[in-house]
Length: 406
Image 1 (spheres, rainbow, N blue to C red):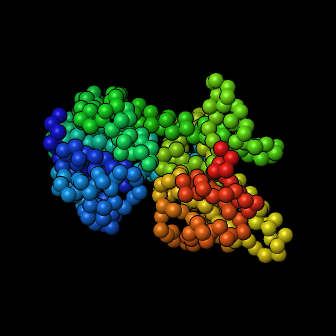
Image 2: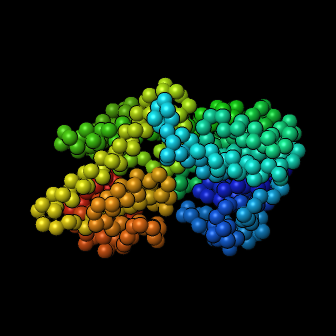
Image 3: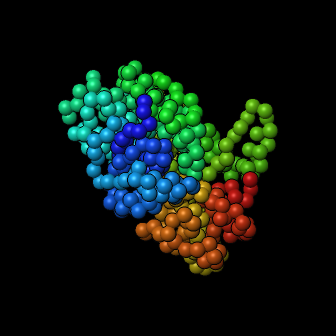
């Protein structure tokens, strides 16, 4: 495949924009698409609307070289890449498992938007993490719009990057690529091999979809064990961090660290895709998801109890400072964040202020500086941001991020 190709990427978010910037700096002419006009305008100024190390340099270079531009609508291209959100419906539940149902509206809308521009010889890629069968659904949407599937290639290659290291991992990590047929797999693999230094592994679209879900479900199950341990240890008066350190001295044991829950678009969402498709058979995956969701409720209740004890002792309601809102340290990503959920839940009934070094404001919450938060009556550490690591533990600190005990 020639390097000098035109690429249309739909979705200029945490995956779409880094991918667009990387490709543009590798000789591809990239037409980025997003429904958010503010994001489009920001990108066209050579700036970024999300926090990710090195991304600003890549975007500025790509825009200044005229290899990357952002738009509200798609255009003709040689390669179409869809990187839009795949959340679940918060108001709809599976009747068998009582679990969330995947929301594929963004994938459908993106597919319908590019359909008029798809022509013979094109490669259409889905990078959004999706339930098994979504790539085939996308192909069916294209066919329904009049696209001859025998003349194009359709494939799935799930992103598998870590926020905070996306620009490096887009290049270095192995990629799983699966097409709706062998020819699509081959065409997609050839494309990814032009910029991926890791191994490009070929399979079917369904297996590629399930591989990403498996990776995230594996992490979710292991985190659930750590979170369950933390709650058990709290009942038993045991320091869970000391316990895990001791257990991990076994040569074949590697217990993860507990937190206040699990967030992000991947690990907190993708296992539900498996559960939703499994007709009640994915019992371990489902229980892990419920354990990690419950951990956030448990944390909120622990803080409420601490606030009640303070009020009994001091005769007034405490000011509670929630330290961190992002779903993991040192990023601005709030998607499915347990820290944000806990803060909002406490804010419903208590006097709450919040500190999040990576964002400037959040509707409905009072964001303050670390200095102002230090004067609060209760400091609840929810995220292990690097800014918090210099803080001193005190009697008014409650640490759910492991900042003071690791």
